[in-house]
Image (cartoon, helix red, strand yellow):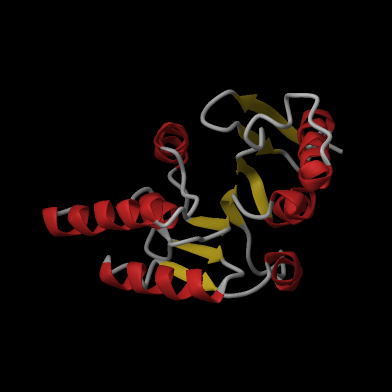
Length: 206
C-alpha cells in the first residue's frame, strides 16, 4: 500500500474515532490479520460494514483472481460513507457493499451458489445468534467464523442484568455457549479487545 493510500486509511480511522463510529480495536485487528494471513481467504463475508475500515484492512489478505469481500450494512448513511471510502481506496472491484438488514439479507444467499472462507460478525449484538446460524450455513468446510465484541463492554462476563442491554447480553452469552457446544465448531474466545470469538467449521461432524 503506497503512502497516499495509507494516508487515506489513516484518515478513515481518525474520522471514525472522532465521530464515535465503532471500528475494530487495533489489538483485535492485529489478531484477525494473523488469522487472515494464515487462511489467505478467497471469499470473505462481513456482517456490519460501518465506514468500511475493516473490509479495507481485510482486503490485503485476499487471494485469487476472483477473490472478494461481501459486506452488509443496514445504515444508509454508513453505507454511503463506506462506499466512498472503498472507492477512494480503489477497491470497488474487491469489496461489494450491501445496504440491507443482514438478518433478512443473509437468508437470500444460496449456500449452493455462494460460500465463504472467512465470516466476520460485528453488527447488532442482539442478532449474533441469527448471524451465527447463517454463518455456519454459508461457510465452506474449514472456514473460520470470527465474532467481535462478544464480551459487550464486559457485560457478558459480569452479573449484568439491567433492562437496557439485558437481551443483547443474554444472547451473547448464548452465542458463546453454542459455539462451545456445537460439534461442527472448534471454538475459542480470547480476551482480546472486547472479546473475540473464533470458530473453525467442520460440517462433516454431525
